[in-house]
Image (cartoon, rainbow, N blue to C red; front, side, top):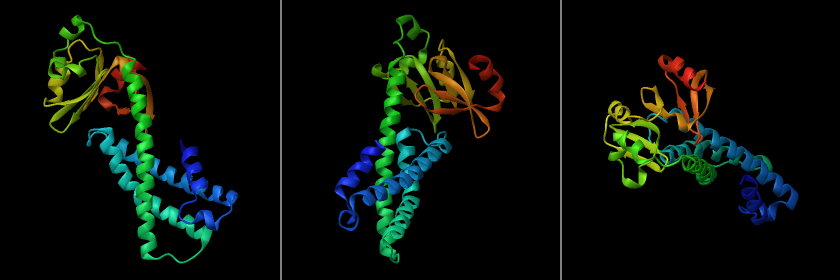
Length: 239
């Protein structure tokens, strides 16, 4: 994906680069610029997604915020690379244009990252078999979900006054206290790993360390924090 983006900019030569740079220098220019911009944007998106996972429900909303956060540093970095290549003195208009370009690049990288993560989530969800009638009867929570979302529960998390329920068939917000949702999960094999997260056995990829703390990597690529009080139980179950 990264290579395709660089190739498009190299061949089309936007922003006057086709006229001002020969083919090989132009390739180097766009390669460096996109590598720096991509690194900044992805870092910002990952940080926002990690730090605000418990506060902002929905991957798309967190990544959109990450795009806004990355826009200014990406714009300033691309402006610095352009000045180093072509020279000149930066003006307020130049900086504003660079920041606008940075937002566009960040949005592009955000969209590509979101599509990649969504495909991983879809692949993970599709690998879980549909529940039998007996299994559904053991899980009262499923009756609160739309019929098309009724599948094995994989993950539940707090979302303000709602509980976000992820099943093998989709994701849905329901107006229910998290503690009640966990109780209604019934026979679902899993564990409440945090005050705002319940994870099913079938959705655990592995345990890992994140910022010095225990976390769970889910099969859709998400990382879920583990409370200190639940560390022993998590290690005993999935370690």
